[in-house]
Length: 244
Image 1 (tube, rainbow, N blue to C red):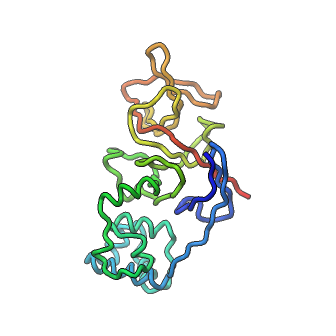
Image 2: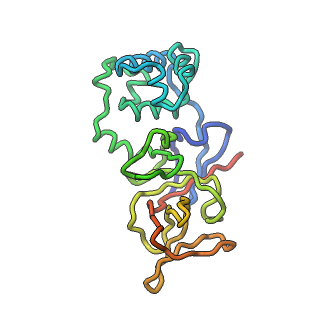
Image 3: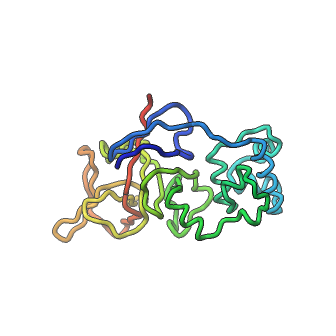
């Protein structure tokens, strides 16, 4: 996949780095965020008041403290782009309205389910982990924010890889994009849980009617599927941060 430009909405927000798609191509991230903090502060307060929420209730819904929200509303604090994207998602408003678009009517800025479904294919939810009930249930506490990457299929999620079990294909800290579902193809990389309930990445292999899950790192051993094995989805893309 050839990559020319993309906007990284939340992941790797600080420090200069190059993000490389392991299928080929690279891009240098752009940390510039062009929006008016003054308009943002007004819109955030307008949204909270329209929802009839106290500062504490509104702050809790976004996973921030009340004092930080108060600073945003008074124009004393500058919210991160990732926080603003989470706000749009949690409270169902458009980015254009939040960033000070001409339409002042909050009701008209509300996003329909159809709009969010179409948008989800472009902005991928970044999860802290896989919680009970996924993908039917995704709590706000488990949602770090959104990332925007090119050529990602609809309905995918992102998670950060941990450990060296799948090295060198997937390294610790890589951004892993996966498509939820239990049906997987032979030799695909899957996100799954083992018998201890740990969420891991492994290569799925089917040989002679038996299913195995293999690491790429030869220092570790493959294992067979058992009653406790649960597959969460198939990896469709891997991105890596390279410091420059």
